[in-house]
Image (cartoon, rainbow, N blue to C red; front, side):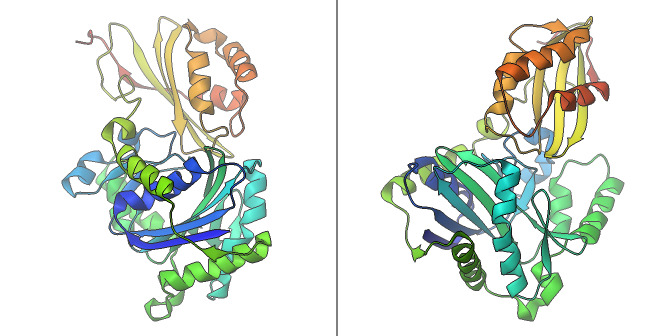
Length: 359
């Protein structure tokens, strides 16, 4: 197993490197454990999210906080120099997501425990100390590689997190800060500032735990020229506003569409995360659909292919369940079921009744 511990790096590089290593890897390549610490704060939305819906974009822009879209599912997260992010890249590997977490979570759990933190794995993919979350993990397929991601949560700016999120009111923001204090913890909270390990010490311990768990030796390495080139390309793409804010045209709140068209939104909590469905409906016909959320879906492009199949032509809302069954039969995926989308549809909320033509 190659180990590439980059230390403190520029914000775009901290996100692009692991994507690049996974993207260029061949199925026969050895595993790679990559880690980095961003030089400053930025926000990353999950692959299936609407950035404009999840984030307080104006706050981020006015405070110089970059926004990125990663190629891994999950929710919007604040990343900064008080966290070190690690990524285990497994070329040619295949596994169901729940099986992957069950197999690999023992390594970060054991690593936290070696520093005296009573961490445990709470399915599906959380690291907890008692009832408080100390870190989440994620997984995705990028190129020919299965990628398992996580972080060392040395400290966390709860107030900044509450400000970068899109919340309905200042009172709700205060409640968000309170909830973050009540339901999450950090290494600093658990150990005190004087007992915090360095990022280098933490990664040495985690590397040892992965070596023991996977029964494979590790050797320090550097990025190849191909990996560096791809990292530079992705550093541009992942922070490009066109990529970050993709699919946000007709789904934008208050957007004028055309006479008599209603924009609906439905939410439903699934075992793999929150599914958000937004759709246009006119006179009982569903004309367009967007699917997303903070859930983990395999394959990675499953939601986009399912959406394309559902929207190949408009259909009656009364036929929604039948249309779902047909589309799921053509686009098999894990992490979402037809009944999940039926639930989201049944809990619909009109978010933008539109009565004037779009110019």
